[in-house]
Length: 350
Image (cartoon, rainbow, N blue to C red; front, side, top):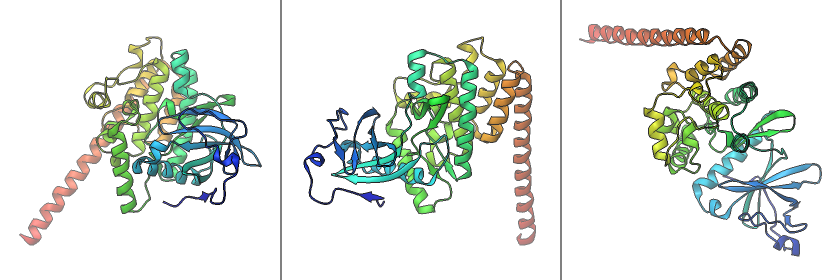
């Protein structure tokens, strides 16, 4: 994959020799990264560290891939994909990507500067959040994920660690590295799915499997809009209860529980949580994607209805049963059509 911008091909000055330490995040005074002056570390993850900087026109954030991650072809491909997808998108709930740079053997993405903690950090520090606050975050997420789906992109890695809370209680959805471009070519898609599957199984983030739908755990290539519905619901479960929907001592054990354990109730953690919200999350986390809330628009409608009448769990359950009946009817029609088609072929050619 080509790199959008390369800098530092000429002779190095003294500042350029002062490379950022992406392991410790220590930045010396006026340390440079190509044309950028690094002003301090904003945080780090398993693959990269993010620094505050300025591009001469505006403050920016620079996400620098660690040397260890850059040496792994799969992780490097994920980093490039995050940059490529990010440059295509413009939405108030997505951190804008301005450029991808390569300087002195470091890969980096130049992004919008959006400061604030992740929702994971908040719930770890403060415990479960008030349900109406979580409902508000859920509505924001349905908006941005609906936008991604309209662009032909499935996120596939929705979790509290990938959601940043910025000024004004506005959330930003992070990390598009697992993003699946639905409209990409068969060859490109096959490569992307193999990468995503390898990353998922290797457990680059141990918490991730707890938010993944069963069909995505089984094969990342099967992830669709309903898989992101599941991930959003699992994220809301964590924010509401302070606990993972499924936990274990290893990624493999978590994956097994995603398949085998019943969908958990938020009311088992806190009986004061609204029964309608409990029923809605059960629907949104159904094991079978055909029996799950199908898309973000539908989930958004139901979140709004729960906000208006949090006690009416019966309405949610009725709608869920009707949705399941429609699915069964569709399957029946398809099976009948196949049987009739087979009988006609037998009659013509038999």
